[in-house]
Image 1 (cartoon, one colour):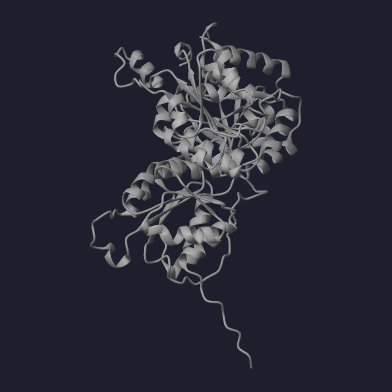
Image 2: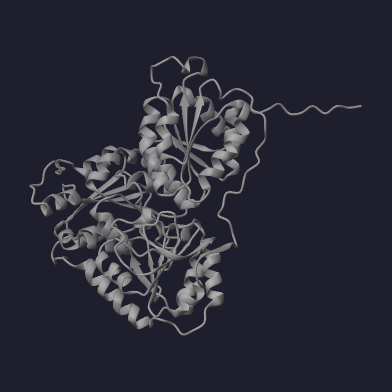
Length: 539
């Protein structure tokens, strides 16, 4: 009798790399260290690119942006001690932005972990509050733990999962073979909770409005949103993190929540007699929920947040829920297209308020950049006044084409996000609209774009201040304090990092700087010298 020998088990590093490759991961973003060298080699062997960022915090932002842009889990890598503490902010951002990220941190050898103090921190205690789960990857249970980590990261609501791996565990054989768990939202499920008939409630509404959020984006519910909007004549407001899930050139598009001109949008919601919250997550709010309009909750998860009350909860796949409502609909369209068009005109006037001729206004920067970029370009933003302007004024062409953080709202996201988006979606140009404060936090990441030959464009709203904080200080009657950002020559900085640099202080100069956007072969940093006065009229 011939006995067939079983293949030797792979190492723990190889098994993890195999799972990540099978899950569609093609880039790991991180910073090398002695405790993760074995995994870096295993990833390289699997054809996964390891992108070394300038620091671990921005590597985590890159992983988040990669996940948003492609719809697959993002992965970041850090070494022990200061590497793991530096990645913490990005892990928290992914969790609050509801983005599936696997954060892997090396640790000292298991034989010394319990007593050695140099560069040793307790990862479980550190990451548990800001992640969905903090796990330890040991060779004996690696197969199960990796599956659990991936499934937890993508399960509703998605977020970050942290894995700790000791330096001596990577090379140890791990039993098991790659067997991916389901990595997408559940489909074709609709569970109805609450008293009464939700269909009757919807058909009885005379002025309903749909508020679509990130779960609608994750469920790719755009076609069903369009169908219900057109069938029932319902305007659709989207959250900033869901931009593109509903076409922004559609007659029933009704703007973006909590961005520039936000009062007009909230007035629309307050004047409605029913809000269909379709995949809307309270983490997407900036302003407090203050309207008394009845809400019908349509989401992948029950309304456990209770930021708004909802007599009806329809849970499951958001597209399936919307499709079910379409099938039950009877009646005439509730809003005429002309009514929605008149409302959009008021919204446009609101976000243009404060614009002055003869200056480079924040709204000019966004509209000029949008006109220069091809329809398929991916936009990323940072956090600050510019984000609120870009979130409203930039017209999104399709889902996952606009990457705006809102959960943790951490500064420094825009630049690394644009780099990761261009790397993950090489067929799409990428542009970052960032403030000078956020740019200062991540500026040196542009050397990565240069080294990788990624023609990323970064437009910096340069007003020499942390504008949002200054406005709040002035509102409270205080003098602007600790908010000035002076002395940065961004053109010289760009050239020092192997990028092209340009400076613009008029709309014409900005148009010239962005000319030929889609055909660029070198990263570009544009210092847009904006007049911040328009922000005062907005916020």
